[in-house]
Image (tube, rainbow, N blue to C red; front, side, top):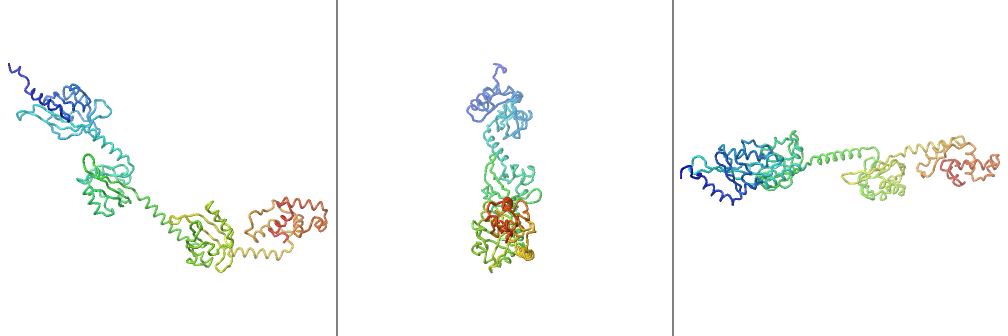
Length: 491
């Protein structure tokens, strides 16, 4: 047999390798130094979604034409950077992660972890080149899902690798909260961006980070890109990312709550100042029975009570209102409508003296508790002046027939400002004759007596009475008398 008739030197070696490769879980592709693909085991074929070595391509160039490879950032790998091409170039890559898919596919189908192997018989030039493949698609799919959820989570979060305390992931929620960009955080160490500068139990937290232990919920002042700080509550949880031990930190922004608390405190301080300094008497009550919680200086001056004497009491305990039924009606109005304005009431001073007041009330909140704010405007002096004026007019005006109906109604209102709301004024002014008839009705004269007194016929008197009833809205004599007395007519 001539030298040309001898089988290739690598044939026995390749046969033995193929026998060995068949049972391997790892994929193996063998290629000679010229770039010809010699063999591939079933695991390697399955990892490419094919059933025959021919489907890989006869050479490394054909492989590159049939399969698209991408880096983990989804950028396409140039053909010269394909692992088979790098094998031919004599490069070594102990562990390389690539995404693999059929040429023209929209998305990669597999994630391969590949490494090189070079075989030779005499320690010289390589006789055979090998590519060892592990399918790590499931692992990276899980990591991709975790990363997608991590970035989609609106709660601010970042991940620190425990080995070197570097930031490996940060989500948009944290970037929005802190004002930093992703590049300003990723790859930095905890020393370079220390969000634990003002955290509760700082030494304890640092020990937990160094040991990769759980960090319980703690409050901290998070430094912002603007140079300010914001109050947060943070917690750390050990996790594994890309086979590396890490700590996941999540944050809750407490700054809005702190600002709201400060605003509430400022508002309550302002309320307390205004409440105490107001010249109008004020009372704050609590509970269904409107038990007194606070009174201001004006109230103490108005009623003569000290704060100690009234706090914790209800109005009935103090006999504060002259008309308890009226007070109960107003309390019902508060429950149903939330408050009222400008009701005319009479309070009683500690010494028993009556006090005319206009009272208003409104539901409010004090220290987070539902309360009612009562305002009492003392109008006793004004009321006395009004009554003095009425008495003066009564004294000088012995005959009030010439006064207009509106003046008489106003005088009657001044006499009795808390008259029942059912009383109503006539729709038009009474004539002089109608007023004379009304005054005689109030003197208990019948139609015949009125006709004789005024020198009129009985029919004429009846007509005047009918028009009078229509104007003042009554239908009998007794009601006309009540109407007249309420307005100071015929007294």
